[in-house]
Length: 149
Figure 1 (cartoon, one colour):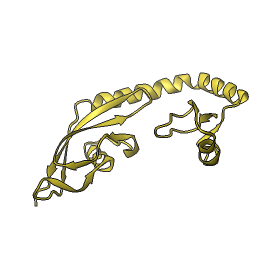
Figure 2 (cartoon, one colour; figure 1 turned 180 degrees about the vertical axis):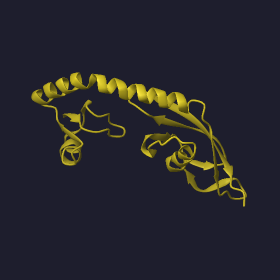
Figure 3 (cartoon, helix red, strand yellow; figure 1 turned 180 degrees about the horizontal axis):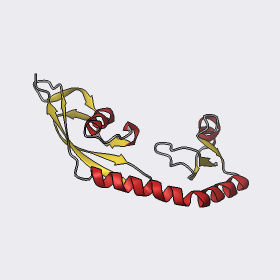
């Protein structure tokens, strides 16, 4: 079943993308929640016209994302957390902690755009990817250290 996404859906696509999904997923989740509409020929024509009119605005959004990526390029984070005597973390470090550290530096990044590949459960150096735009992403290195008492 072909659908047109009305908003970004993680691991599926971005707003205004035409994607193919299984019928149950489309009819039972995406369409009722307003995240997508059926990609009928009329809907595709409307999408094409809307995209043509919004091309300039989308270009500005991409440019802003590239500027933010340039600012984030040299950033590296140090995240302090509670650690056991063996070096393992109580809990884990995720996108929320990374977003908080970026906010302290003056970069307000939505935590949903931050992707950490593996679970961070030990002290060490890791890399997080921030997806600022469909075509713009930046990798931010971060170090997890023991919190001082």
